[in-house]
Amino acid sequence: MQSLPASLVLIAALAVIAPLAVRLLDPVLKVPIVVFEIVLGMLLGPSLLGWIESTPFTDTLADFGLAMLFFVAGNEIDFTAIRGRPIKRASTGWIISLAAGIGAGFLLAPAPEGAVIIGVALCSTALGTLLPIIRDAGESTSPTGIAVAALGAVGEFGPLIAISLFFTGKQVGAASAVLLGFVFLTGVAIFYASRARHTLFHAQVTRTLHTSSQFAMRSIMLILSSLVVLSMVLGLDMLLGAFAAGVLWQVIIARAPEADRRVIETKIDAVAFGFLVPIFFIDTGIDFDLGALTSSVAALALVPLFLVLLLFIRGLPSLIAAPVGSTRADKTALLLFGATGLPIIVAVTTIGREHGFITSGMSSALVGAGMLSVLLFPLLALRQLQRKESRTVHAPRPHDDSPPPPRPTHDGGLPPSDAAPTGG
Image 1 (cartoon, helix red, strand yellow):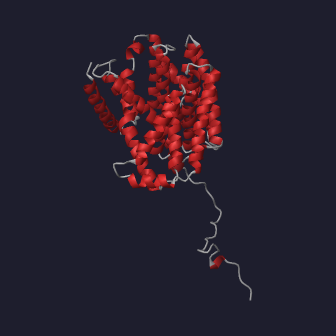
Image 2 (spheres, helix red, strand yellow; image 1 turned 30 degrees about the horizontal axis):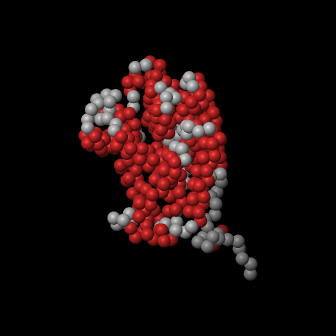
Image 3 (cartoon, rainbow, N blue to C red; image 1 turned 90 degrees about the horizontal axis):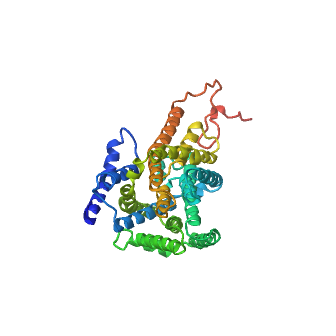
């Protein structure tokens, strides 16, 4: 095993190698970078080469990375786009997924706690992973892209609520009261933040945007740490606080100048995806118990089983959120996007493993299925959308023998030759 300084250097090296590997493979196969980060962590971790080991310091950085991932997810959700029908139908589908997931969990886990762990893992959708993919594909504002955002919002926020309700160590009634209290306090903060104009705040952000003061980023860290600590003090999962912090920041900065918002988004991406989030995924690979997975045929067989369950338990109910007029390609893409899950799976299985609710082999099988879902499902979904666009572009125009409509003039009337004859 390497020392802490050597491990930090190797983790930093893996974070640099991962995007280079993505670019190298891009002409052949588009692989999400998080898959490379996890695989590289596994390769150099105790499961294989043993060059890197997890330490309390790297685990702390990984926790910050996970918190930033959920902060970004909360910050990027366009609530005006998904409100109404998209969010209602996505919520209905998620409730069905949760019930089906817990039902499947009872068939696979010996204890009710393990069944809930499996159920919550299987009803998640990786919003933080899907948003960049949807954005890069130019589908953010399409009906399918909006439906994916709604699915992801519910598929990450819903499991966080479930985690807080089931794994706080309290009675369900007390946990519900605490959760409602947190939601109420956060809702009040968001409400007042949305009503205020924040003129002085935005002015300070503008003045320090390109200086060492960096008021915007310092404010983000304050909001994030405050809500994360509040959620932990209340016995809730820290990811709930991180997600709420992202939503709150989005409301606070909404009325700032657009140019400033773009710069801040770039800085958030730099801190999150340039520093902290890669450490989380690499650390996930380092902690991945490959031995527990490969030493048991039963555990290894769970990987494809969980992958199929993600399709049926999370993917099929996602079709409820399909926009009106969706084609078969749209629905297939929506099913695959909805079944893509990893960060929540990692978080939930870590809780389950540490509390002894599920075995290390089952935890590794769930994470392995989540990795495969991130690798396969978005790629297949994008191909569906690309084929649909290709068919639309090359579709022959219907034959029409009717004369063309009159050509309008600049003032909206008909050209003089087509105008009605005047009297006189």
